[in-house]
Length: 130
Image (cartoon, rainbow, N blue to C red; front, side, top):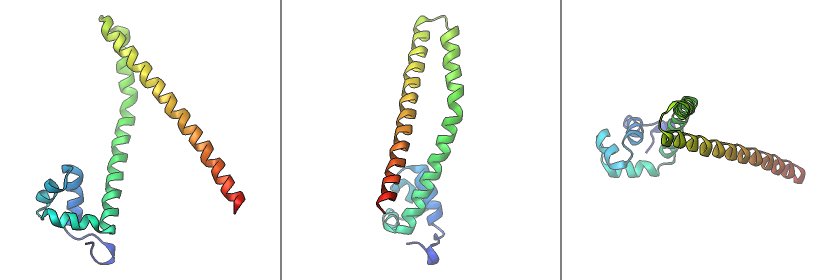
């Protein structure tokens, strides 16, 4: 259970780090030096569950930032290989990958734009009803 005032206990913070690192409760419990049943009980505690979920979100945001910063370089590598490779197979694979991912990006962007417009319309509709 979370300590007083909703603060984490001395073992809960390292447990969260170990859950993120190990990927399962058994290994995280062992790495933290606690019983797996303690982990299960803590996971039922809303304060701990919220802290764990927030840590997971922060980790995921960091991963997404790294991926985003690497995407331009990855595209440049594919372009270079497509243009300079002596292997026609390699050129075709690079071209196919660039086309497929480019089309997917356009579709995702279009979907995001449509969703934003629908959400704005829904918000206006709900405001009018209030």
